[in-house]
Length: 271
Image 1 (cartoon, rainbow, N blue to C red):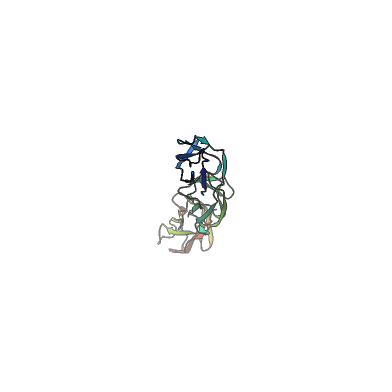
Image 2: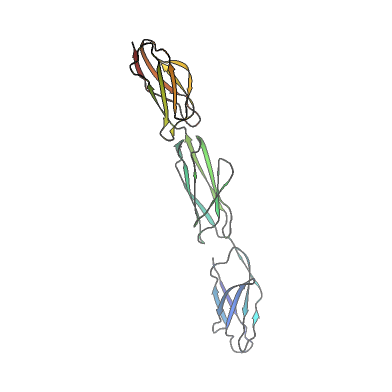
């Protein structure tokens, strides 16, 4: 904000004082202004003073009729400018594998706000993000499934008051999974070995590399569940295939980030 200052010189004679006056904030010169015909000078403080207490004085350099002099101190208190926070963040619900981003603006009636914001995810440690022209952005990379809240704040800094914080709530669901079952031979002979391979993937997060897969034949589990490897696969070897019809499926049991999933049926007839 700004305000007008008025400096008047009481002349030593009947002739109005002439010349210039200098206005100082403590020992820091702010401006030099000419005296008008009335022996006074008017000045709107510009640029605005920073928030805090200022001690202003006026120094008159004098003229041929009037000696120089310095005014008494005038104390001016500048309050911080009011700031406000607005946040535009990602969707309130999404599946695991995606990220959550926020664009934050800190505004005021006194120009671009300086400093930094903080955000706190789920009551954790505050993270500091610097402002650029009153704006800041941040991204939470692949938050875990579950309900989350992120509190965004701007503390009092420099010439600006603290802004009311903003709480953003969002929910992350488990990523859905797809299971593809592939036999080593679609037309095996009875008594021959057969390998079943299940490939587990997710649309939102690509290859799944953890968890267990159970293989079934006509609804009956075959052996122990197999662990999914780094390539997203689990396998089961059947050493000697029984004669007859077989209907195989593979079921992925799921983990914290990925939901359970099942393959289609693969029918094989061994003779």
